Image (cartoon, rainbow, N blue to C red; front, side):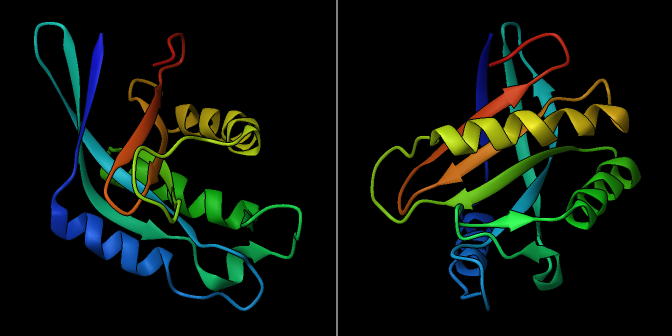
Length: 147
C-alpha cells in the first residue's frame, strides 16, 4: 500500500510559521495535524486539514531534546481525535531544504505516544510528519501495520 500525504500550501505555511515561533525554554515547537482519509484501489490518501499546536504550558524543560511535552499535550490531541473523528499526526520542523528524516530520538518518542491514539480512534491511522523548508515526510501507523 502506498500512502499519499496531502496538505494545502496555506496550511503548511501556517504550521511552519507556528513551529518557528520561539519558546521560553524549548529548543523547538511541535504540534499535531488532524487528518481525514481516503482510499483508492491500492493507496491510502491522508488529507491533512487542521493544525493543533502544543500549548506553551505543556512543554517541559529537557535540554536533551528539542522539545519535550507533557501528558496534557497528549490529552489535548487525544480529545481532538475523539471529538472530530480524525487521525492525528505529530509534526515538527527541520530547518533545511530537501526531504527531512527522523532522528533516533524521534522514532523512540513516536513509538511511546502514537499508540495512545488507538485508544480513542482504533480504526484510524495515526503517525508523524516532519516538515522541511520545501518538503514533507510522513510515517503512518495502524494497530497491526506500519508504513
